Image 1 (cartoon, each protein chain N blue to C red):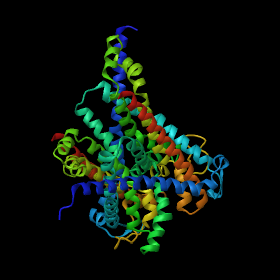
Image 2: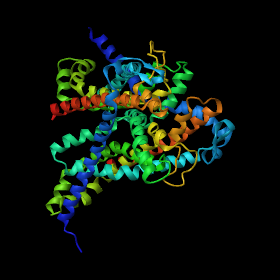
Image 3: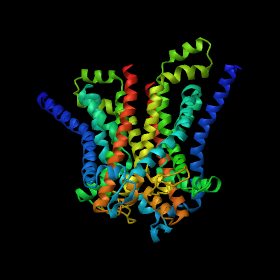
Image 4: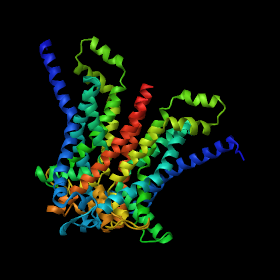
Length: 278
Length: 288
């Protein structure tokens, strides 16, 4: 018997629709569970007080600050490097063997799993360079990890800037660098910012690469050489060692809400860029 | 500023940017160099066979066999693919072919947000909801290949969706119009024309999804049970290459630590092979 193709078409449409909403439903359920279970233990004082007794009581202030420090430092290191690479690839060179090699490097870095970054950061920064478990070791490891994201998004953003702007700038006597800094980068800024925000999100949520480089000290890091704990690491330790489920949920709430906020902001910024150029 | 200094300045800037651009290559080299330098000596010392095909992992007693972990890593990766790929591809097809503009504006960012959820959160929810569910309704302790595959299956969704979506979107509009003009339904067009044309990108999305699954660590540690055996069924606990490293790195020293770097060497090799295949698959299409 031959099934009516229109019937199959309608059936498939509903089935695929279901799949898409099921997947979005997963996100909703995850956020909902974290919210419901975490909200009762999550307050302003939870975010602003120090933990006591391994985190069984008290708040997560040092973990929040540790996260902020780690993300800020890695962005400070990775942005010039990544943006510089993107400018080089788009403005200063043509597609050649050299750019193929650089792109291969960037793609490969993007594919390396975080635990390998953890291993590398541990042996290179922590042990060989003698930085120990520290904010600096963590931030340098994270820098390498987020570099591909910053390079790719910046490159896309710079490429999207209309060619005419560059030609006009050159014809007015501006050098390549002046054109890049005064004309190209301001137009590409929102796109570059998107990459930076996505990278912040990545650094905030990362655990495997951070725990072996930054360590897991519960104290507030006072210098670059101090160990510290990010929210993700704190949450992992609370949950894995069964220290406190209530505090784990509350930490997860702060963690997930910050990451979602950062990502939504990144998406919104990117959409403004797309709207501008199309 | 005289034109001479301007030229000089331009030249210096170009040099600096070139150095920046090579930093990625340098970092890649350093990562490989240090993992290999730390991990390879043990392959000489203990023997390649006794590590890669060894069944026993007791690093403090001189046993460095990681065969069960290699097998486990592959098992959870295929498990993740079985669960994640159909769902992810379905989402991608719906987004690319069926969803209206409005719907897309809501669905696409929502699906991308799944990628932002940290892996520890996936692991945590896996322990609290999926593991007990399996224990109560399917059997075993719940910490199992099945639980790990489910958690990883969800975690690879964003990779599978976004890359196969891009592949479907890059199929020229005229293909669809041609098929529809011949009287095909939407689904016939999608199934017989669009999907075959986007095949290589779809395949690449699955390979990259496998790369994601094989490299995932924290979520796996939490739900896999970490037993040092090849799982006999989907309900048995297992330990992957990544979790082996993460579970023991903080206290390992000497040969034990080297054993973890050897595990890293094997993991890195698997990842590079997967990335290579993904690249080949994508490039083949570009040449065509």
